[in-house]
Length: 314
Image 1 (cartoon, rainbow, N blue to C red):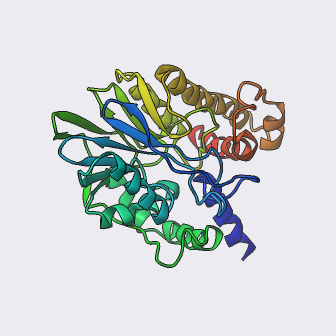
Image 2 (cartoon, one colour):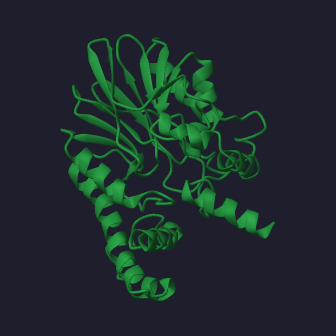
């Protein structure tokens, strides 16, 4: 039982499910980020009943022929609040919801958007996870740890349209470029680019102003994905977590540089067969240690990267 509990704890921490001390509820309010797009910003914290699991961002684009939502937030109640924010701005229907990836804090509100009539679009790489024991156990843990916001009625929702390559949606004179950029943070990473607004909605490939959760991610490919994002002509980025970025290149580079540093330091330790605890203690973390969630996430990130670099060096 202790092994199961430890495994669930690691799973929850790797995707931002459980609470950091002192995290409180935050109101959900849409802020305009470009001529056609808005976002709601979650807390830079771990999910808890106190903050309603409102720890990730979601975005929406009003096209003139319907609304496209990107990500579904961390509970059905939050998604209902997101729909209410959209209705304050337009009476157009929500026609699509694009999932950047299937981590719990981005998908548990999906059933509310689906009930509102949205077509769900996601990358086919998520199918394996969605049907896995891991997903079932994570939802089971969330029903306990995040009650009443996640309960027996909360369910995992399949996409209506699974894609494996680029997809352009054209509506109301806008082109929404949906692009696979994984495997990176997850096997199914998608980003949405709105060239008319030079807006990139990047999901959890970008964590602005905080330490990312690396979890079981392929950090080598994540770095490559960030290099891809740097080639977009983006001036504004909505990250998966943290505030809107008007310094697109700097914020992409911060996430990239953190991952590169993890790989360099932990890779050196793995090649030299240095014990992890010793390697971690001697590493200079000063560039990143003042970022939010460093204390919660960094040691786990470093350990997972150490294990990954052991495998890569074989």
